[in-house]
Amino acid sequence: MKDIVLPKDGRVIVGSETSDDAGVYRISDTIALVQTLDFITPIVDDPYTFGRIAACNSISDVYAMGGEPLTALNIVCFPTKLFSLDRLSDILRGGLSMTEEAGVRLLGGHSVDDKELKYGLSVTGMVHPDRVLRNNTIREGNSLILTKPLGTGIIATAVKAGLLEDDHYAPFVTAMSTLNRAAAEIMKRYPVDACTDITGFGLLGHLKEMLGNKSMKIVIESNAVPVLPGADDYAGMGLIPAGMYRNRDFVGALCSVSGGVDQALVDLMFDPQTSGGLCIALESGKAADLARELADSGIESAVIATVQKSVHPVLEVV
Image (cartoon, rainbow, N blue to C red; front, side, top):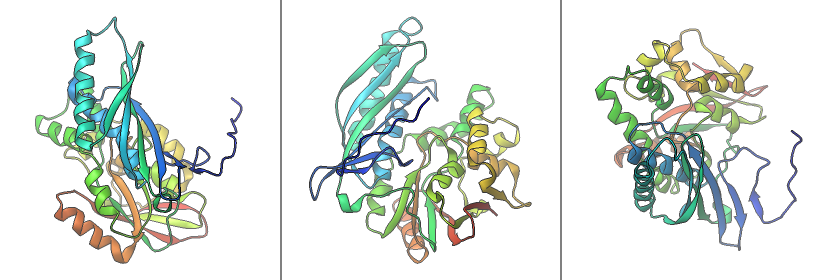
């Protein structure tokens, strides 16, 4: 397929030429729109819970750009020959409950009859043009904070295999249905250099996007990376989603892993996440303060990496 080149527009602050989380369009000197859309296939069986998770996942990109989500439209692909409309109603109720929790006004949406169930949102938010956060503006000396544990893809694989232990289900659902809203509000009080949310490319895939082609290396402290209860055990059992292998191919030779790092933990860093946390880059001297304030607000987070000078771009797991 030939590359599509979009027309240039000086009002576009963030467009499709980068791998950022959302597009940003300047309206005035003080207002810019943040626009994104995302939809997913079911990751849990309960339709109401799936609706909440899908909506939470869609809204997250606006927070990652430093913005405030305002409105949303439903995106629905629904197999009418496989499921009753009651199931669709439950999904939409779940999505509505999450938009209300986020203070987002749901304005409507669009549905099509499809062979595979999918649901998500198109979300519009607002940000000051001078306060847009990008994913590829990390600096030497930054530390990286992760605000949710990894492992949703591996846990979902355990669910499908019928091997998930009962006490591992609630933390899995809670992580995916917790908005990044509170973390984003706290983040705004700090001099953040870059931000992204960890979703389908996994932690290392999104760190690759943050690194870009810069002559820097991101050193990830493997023991500091938070993981969902049981996720490392399931990874050790080989319950690996297909997306993990694609993420490993995407990162490629950019990644260097020290010999003492457990393979299950490395797999978790490639694991495709649904509705994952924010990865926040800021100067190391401020990172501990931000992590402490997040913890004081009940938000699980950890300082997981540092950005250092390098001859070539490198992701180093130690």
